Length: 390
Image (cartoon, rainbow, N blue to C red; front, side):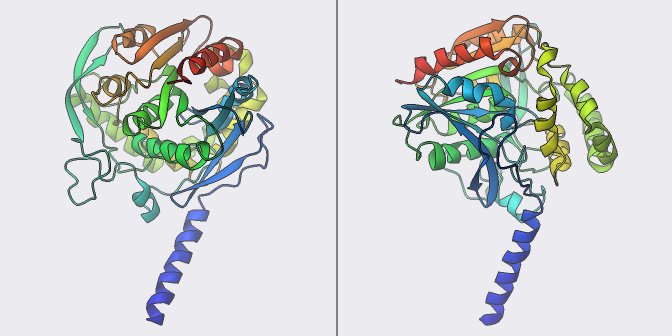
């Protein structure tokens, strides 16, 4: 008995050591917002978040970041919304991003927390989750096109590497954070609003699909349609094997390229592509986005995400019969100068019952909340006013 206890204790210690190696230490205060960096323990992993606004505010919102960035990307939104005095506003680092933990893909802890576990019909060996199982590949799903038209495609939901860095994991993280932190800190409302940018869209919409009792709406800023998703690439039977090969080469041999690109001047130039307001790409932005990308495990998460040619897509989620259209309205805004998000495709989202508004924004790119907060923050506040009594 003592031997078994000793072995179990040693195993736990080794697991803790290996996990801590991939858990970075954030600065006490965010240099972008001057707000304290707080920590939330989720499934034994560290999650960094920031919060602004009165603790007794009647309504709360959670800000969900996009690809390869973190909560500091909401530097102009956190206080901009909270200054109204009516809202408690949170910004969270998704697992694998920013100052949150980045456990290796194949580690036991990563497998245990993976949000894909128990979701798919084929996985009969895993315990079914509360929302029931779905096929891992959805057939003939109606999707949009860059020109605003429509097409049908099969949507593969499962991460090809079995990685925990997927939209189902992140949606579960959001839901647990909402229950464990947001709703326990004093908001009088029993529902919370989500505000998201880019690929944060899929995590947010999935959280609403799985937990309609928690959320009263989603404000989407420049949705991302995942150009490398197997449902999005042209002629997937021919092109996807090539894409997979490139993804594998990057995972196995890309660390040198990653290190070469992870420099301030290079990051600054990369950010100038999605940003139409170049003045917004300042030293502070470059620093708060780059610093966490230099921590242990960050490169592997980036390559995992670049290999994620699967997962849910916005139109597939919004067209689901389970999406609570009447109790969780969706507003969408987008920058007309966004090189990544086709405006016509965004406009076509008005056909979904849940989408109440699509708002084009002139002179901004993929990150309007950081490029033109004086335009975006009032729209978000209008949205929050619309949903707070649902």
